[in-house]
Image (cartoon, rainbow, N blue to C red; front, side, top):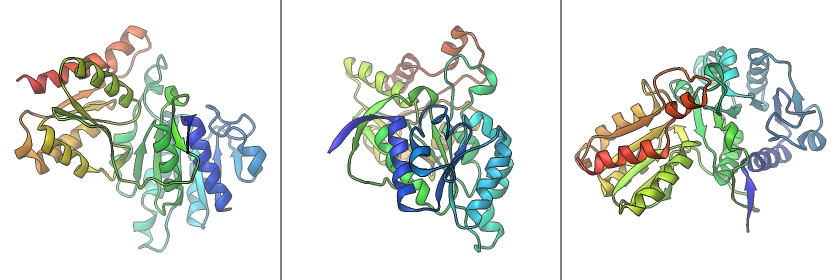
Length: 326
């Protein structure tokens, strides 16, 4: 039976279920314990699991990420929460040079079952240093798995799969979407890593996106339908490994593709999708792949600059019409 719960509640349920099953799973990060989490994702978890398994850390991302990597190499399963992935830049040495390379550097002797999680992307007027999308940064590193979601159903099933995975997983959420509600079953379930989800079926054009840009795409699809354009909408959910097969299957039906991606355009997730589509589905395309990205600049503070910078439904609609009527 499904209930309507928020993204933050779905994440908490998923983490708590795995912590009840396995005493080796623990949560650590800034304000996760006494304050119940910066976004209240870990609300109540300190009371249930105690201070040895829900651990407040100093403001030292490099330090507590390193502790997590060492713990994972010694048989534990840490969940490391960053207040934002923008702060995780300070911990990239541990994520990229240690966690991602543990298996290969040890010739398979050591695994690193760790989840690094927190919000990615812009969250309004937070200016340049707090508004970056990190999916393409992390997905460029062999050895890391990358998940980026806002749907509560997907969040619960994928956080559980990430926790039990034997490889390091970067789990991207959204500051602005923790209150988003969705139907989540009461019974336990897992969603496999590396499988995209078709959120809306259609026949005229495929629109691919992930994270909070899915809300932008859904609004665009509703408006396009009013104009007689039937869009198929795919939520990547997992960035690496990328489920290119689901995208190709959709293009074989629609013959057109628009990728909506909050990343900067150079070296973006949308760039990789465009390349793989021309490799595996070129003969099915009736128009060039079109991308809708954030502007290729650092995000300013002014609300007018935020509006110009971000992808929005109007930009998506314009891109769809460009591939439909060329």
